[in-house]
Image 1 (cartoon, helix red, strand yellow):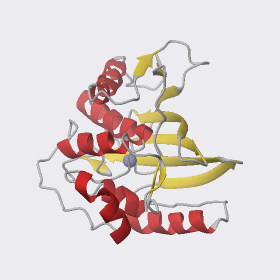
Image 2: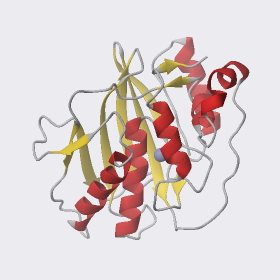
Image 3: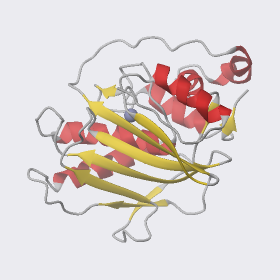
Length: 248
Ligand SMILES: [Zn+2]
């Protein structure tokens, strides 16, 4: 379930909260205005059994957005993202240096395996293979890392991963951290494939993607696939050609 709440009283965010409430009901997202000029967002997802089901179609874009993006949005779920975010998109700026990523090197959580680190790295590699303007470099220096990936035993909510990110008033993402659960809320330990898939999903959030109702994509709220779909790739590629902020 999704329980968005915001302390910011601007009409825009109030509208956004309402839109998120209706759009992402099965999941947990909260939007908290952390500091002046910064907005923090948390998105949680869960991983399900692999299935091969056909996608549901995306919902139609609103008129102005459709006209602006229609020629380039085929095969993407950018329309769903725009509908869910009051027609605004957030992403990282193009940078001269890669995002430095620190992955928690060990954990006291029972059942935690160092193989998980490989799963997470592989997921970053899968996104990096798309040659986006955002690149990743792993670091052992947690203090100066741009992105922290940590492991928790489980979440109290029905999620297996959570990404918290912040953006500035121009909708550039400024920082992001990912937490991954070793155990599903209902008990079982995530196997390697599930950890890899959950990592793919959370890195998608880190890059600025939102959920899609397309269950064949890794950005479905409950992740049933284990690889990036054509729509995942097309959507993030399109996102990184667009200026952040409102698309109207
Ligand atoms: Zn998610």
